[in-house]
Amino acid sequence: MNSWRRLFVKGLPSAPARKGQAVAAGAQEQEATGVFITPQTLTSFPVASTAIVIISGVITKLWPDTDSETVAAIVAFLIGILIFLINVPDLQCKSSGPRVWLIAIAVGLINTFYLVAVALGVFKSLSALGTS
Image (cartoon, rainbow, N blue to C red; front, top):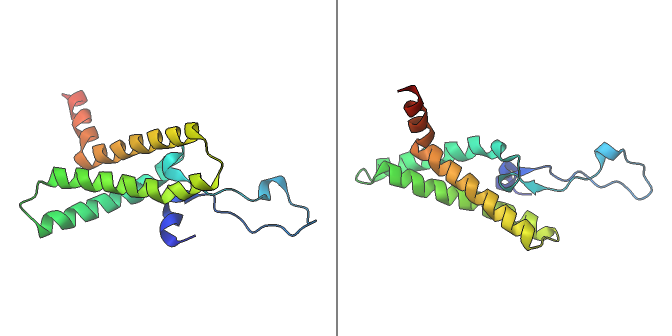
């Protein structure tokens, strides 16, 4: 598994046991699961948020006439899509029906909008409303 996928994939497979060898139930081989489309999504947000800040900061420094909020939103959407696409091979390896794909897409979209909201400071604005 390449290094980029390791940032966003939980439960990397362990080495398979030899035939006839006893294996404890907790030590059995785990399936690799994309963290961006599962309930464990919080582990990918620090890395994604940092990437958004760095990339949008560089773009606005290189092109100062660009709107920083627009750039941050576009970068957040692209990173959300990238993380989803990194996790797609995990779904394709399993016998996934349409229900699994629909859930994965819905969770991926929610998480992408969460990244956009963080990049735009939506939660900061909401907390300011509560204190006024």
